[in-house]
Amino acid sequence: MVGHKNIINIGFTVVKGHQIASGLAADSPYPKGSIEMQAPYFKMLGLDLSNYYLATINAQFNCHAIATKQYHNYFQDVHWAAGFASESFGFIKCGILWQNKRYDALIYQPDKTTKIAHTQPENCLEIIAPKLDGLDYGDQLILQVDANYIELQR
Image 1: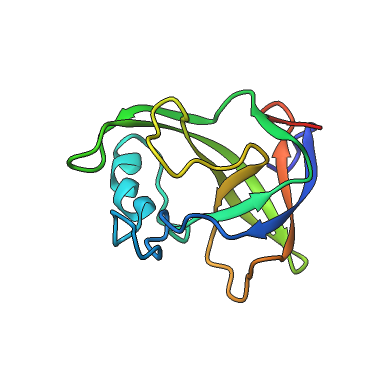
Image 2 (image 1 turned 135 degrees about the vertical axis):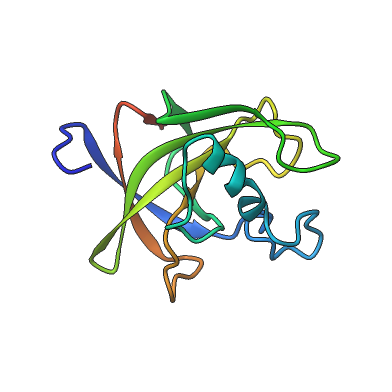
């Protein structure tokens, strides 16, 4: 993302999510976590998640809602779990700043029109990043993203 003129820095707070992506939820239908199960399908479609921790950081922003304008990758009708309907997914390349270091990351956005349950609040995004040892709920981070891809609605 170096050299992009439209990069914006947006602060966010790490909040607890449904813990379905990581598989940590006691009632998760996906004990390995949904991201680990989805990763081979995304790889076949051209997006390799092997450099990332297979869970999401739930990022809450100080706004009413976040509008997605476009995606770097959009995968339609991915049938990744037996017994469940296909879902569509969008990904946006981004970076996160934490403890004075930048990490390449991806905004992970299951399409709300195909997602059955476990939706996120309108002012939250799910972010896939490398494992950040010591990251905790309440931590403040910065999202670096091209303004052509998302918009915060105050």
